[in-house]
Image 1 (cartoon, rainbow, N blue to C red):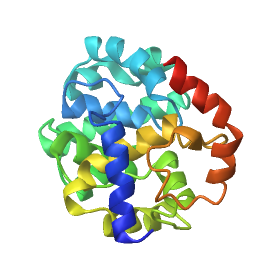
Image 2 (cartoon, one colour):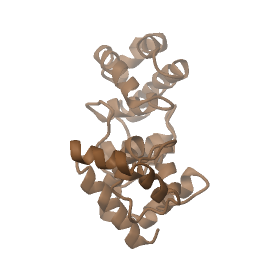
Image 3 (cartoon, helix red, strand yellow):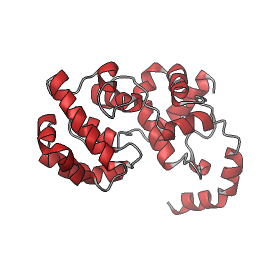
Length: 226
């Protein structure tokens, strides 16, 4: 997409979902950090089911270390990779206490030095907790960047750089939420629902017209029945 097309696309998503925000449940930067680490290869819904009990017992890094790796694991057994995640959460809490006085750092270098924290997780924390314009690229945003022509790239870093370049600066921070929710509920991996896509016009997905035509009766019925 050109920059004007990118603005039209992002503006359309914003108008369709003006109050978009993270679907993870958290009450502090620490809670967000742990939730995002737990969400790797797991759904936000599955994480939201385990974090209330976990944070009730261990609401701070010190309490989490006192709970121990086995205690953390006891709360998160229902999510994917729970053993490795329990180990990472325990270790990152130790690091927060040892290096940051128990506080979550706001800069990328410090965040990425924590156990279980990569570039995407750091970007989410910077964006959501600290108001940074960081663009976190997950599987949904990577797919949208390539499928729509918004920011094509062979890897997540290329897509991230393309998004930062094309999305207007004043829209960059909230665009993370607009894009991830659009990918989660409309521009799906296997069955993109082009027939009710807010960003249909500037989108460059080659199959969008065929998918909209294929589902035209369904779309019309949905509109008439509410």
